[in-house]
Image (cartoon, rainbow, N blue to C red):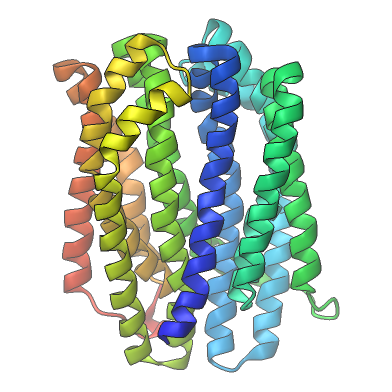
Length: 426
């Protein structure tokens, strides 16, 4: 089981780090070309990008939970049906978002607080990203399905290849085309990943999708969607309050800090996504010992990772302001912000650990409770309170406080509940 677990976790972590690195690459080029306005624009538009990618990831994980539970029960025909239903759902969701977002993006960005040059840059980026949503949804979802089919190292290779394509395209497109150029680089790289993934997945064309499975698939997708999107939904609120408390410089500072913080988030998520196929399989096979070993191993990896990320804080403070060419005002804000955020890393790891366990077992109500409590209640409330009391540092403190509360709540729920049989889950 440990070997099997490592076979999933390592490629999953690499793939998720690549997702975070894609964002960092765009920020690097835009920061050095357009300065604080460009960095603020990318950070404000990022929740739209994250929503698109999270839809693909959520559907991919939701379909994989059904696929692996049936495979663990040796119901191979039903597993193939779940796979093909997931592919249909991915295509439909991606096409819908490609039509929707180009029409809504400018109004959404204005509601997020963007104005003037920041709004213009953000809208330019969002138009291209929104139009190519189908490729981003497909790329994210197909990589999850590939991993759950035992092709985890192909996922890693395709993710790295997509990153390389993105980097090369940014080098040629960022200077002449600005925001639209870096957005196009993202879309084209995901198109390449999608094509490679569907070829490797080789779905059985003779197995028909079963549309009656979609409600159950959507229910299974809701928690992993939320777990991937919640940090960016919190980012939306944080951008708004950062603009109020410290202006464009504060959003620029937050953007650069986010490149580190959310990269760590992606690593935590990669570890949790890596353990998901093992838990779902063990659940279907009724292998409780294997499930327990997988959870203990992943908990240890998360604990060590969060401690390491805390230790990297002085290096982040020293290097990142100069690397992304932020203003002096943004630099000063980051010095304190990075220290405050460091306390959130162990809490974030704990929250993702608890949530991944519950959605892997199909217990969507508990995972959804923990996932959606943050953006709907904790983060907005704490941002409103702390930004008024402390100013910009209160904005940074709000996220750490929210993650601490969620971690305590999640661990308490985990300790008091036990896995129930599948036929009792709702």
